Image 1 (cartoon, helix red, strand yellow):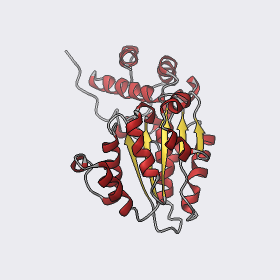
Image 2 (image 1 turned 90 degrees about the vertical axis):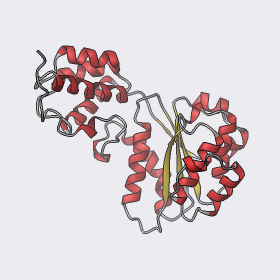
Image 3 (image 1 turned 180 degrees about the vertical axis):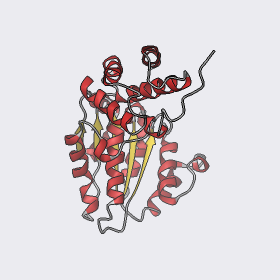
Length: 270
């Protein structure tokens, strides 16, 4: 007979969501990368021309989270500027020229990207430019999957005054094999942040921080975290997902600590 689920084992489930970035002070092992992103974004805080940024690194290396955290920090920091806007899009979802421009327009107008996807691209471009009243950063995640026609939208966005883009990709060489010459020209001189693979120890530390703010005491031991990290590193995203599944499995099974079976199932899923 299955045991009733243990309540209180998971104290904050949102922290176990691998898509939710941690607080800035809880980011592990990315001090240099955060500093480079800060340097790239600093002109906004000083009221100067906004600069574009390229971010490269393997999956699960924390690229998108670090960019989001630094943009949010700047947004919250009230640096004496009139303000700025930013939008993060997934190129897995916004994978065409029209979808990218529609998302950019929706971000600066407060409208719906879905309702704009039957609009001509030239009208979208002009609408974006006419509504761009403050510095704006368009963050394109997984940009290396786009074809050349979709990348045209990035060049069109960059053609607007006081607008920049952050391009997040897994492989720099692959990205520049597919990029259009006009976009490559506009990106010359942009800042670059390179993310190395996470080590097992860093992934274990990431899991420690996530567990600290999401689980009751002693639910997951150091050995448990290391087992997950060793099996899944360097991909921290998948490791966090495995931690979540491990904790949920233990709670559903009526246990107050995770078991080897919980961990093995979660690792297999990840």
